[in-house]
Length: 114
Image 1 (spheres, helix red, strand yellow):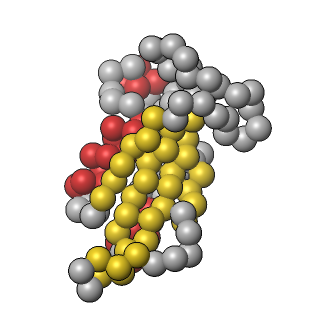
Image 2 (tube, helix red, strand yellow; image 1 turned 90 degrees about the horizontal axis):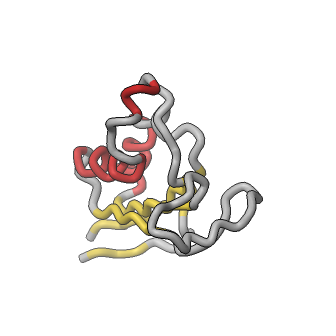
């Protein structure tokens, strides 16, 4: 039996990588896609990207997300479920990449997978 933990990573739609020159950010995938690819490469159990319909991060004005094109401040969520050890290893490995995001354990309750 494997004990699983879930974390959520909150970020704004327009989040860009700081370790890449500006001109390269114009041609790379969005932040959520990069996180999904990095998590898959780390063989994490489950990773989901939630597109938020409305909300705000850090007490900014509410973004309603009513148009087809998202505002760069529109909130996004990545949810990762795996063992706490695998999640911590992934977060430590990608520490610089996740700078400027908010990461939370969803709840202290452990899920059991048979």
